[in-house]
Image 1 (cartoon, rainbow, N blue to C red):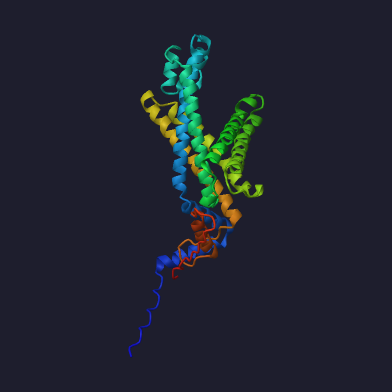
Image 2 (cartoon, helix red, strand yellow; image 1 turned 180 degrees about the vertical axis):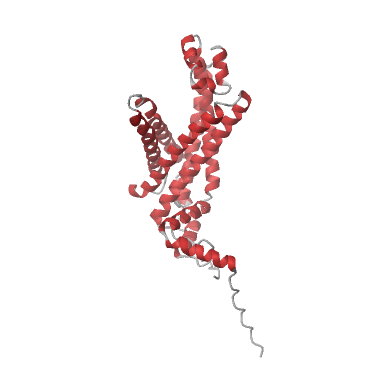
Length: 332
């Protein structure tokens, strides 16, 4: 009787695989590298790049009507006010492309319309509520909330309004240092306030948005790492934005200045969304102990197995559905 042939021995890993396995072992050994890799891997599994692009689009769509409202309000204030026009001519606003030359030319050249102001603010509010709804989707995705546990659209809309108020309040807090501590005799206090208030605003906004918008509630202390990360990120983005305005926008011609403004807003919005998501990923990885993770796909850890199972459960639309996941382990 013929017998079944014995299975061939597993192929020996090549030099590249052996090197990758050594690097994998090293990153698992140290908590800092293991957590960092866990955050990066979870960001990819949650399609963080797509979420960041959607947040950037929503954010840009809500900012642009505000710029339109600002220009019209400026036109209304300048109408028949030669003293204000003279002050603006010698301010940094005069260097802004398109708007600056209109201010220097005459106050009547930059006309304003109250109807346009109202419509622009309403459009910005509508787009801002869409941004808050997208934030809810992103938070629920990062924190592994199953689809059947996510609130219906009417609840999402009701949660968006206090979220928008929170963001506006944090923006005011972030910029408060520039006028509340503007005494030239206290430059150290002014600089410290210019750093501390944006950091505090970013951290409070992160904590408040999670409390308002996320369907999964976790202890306050579990949110502190992400809050600190977002606070630092918001401060750095403010410094980056100021550098970009002084370096490119204020020195651009009218033609290229428009492109510089649009490109800067889109890039800044994308970076803000990306860093905000990374802050949430950091808190989620630390709270759920999503580390260490496999770097190569071989020799999967128990965390890898659990992570794949939770990804499947997150897509469940009907409560009570049982999901069993078996992830094959690739040979080493």
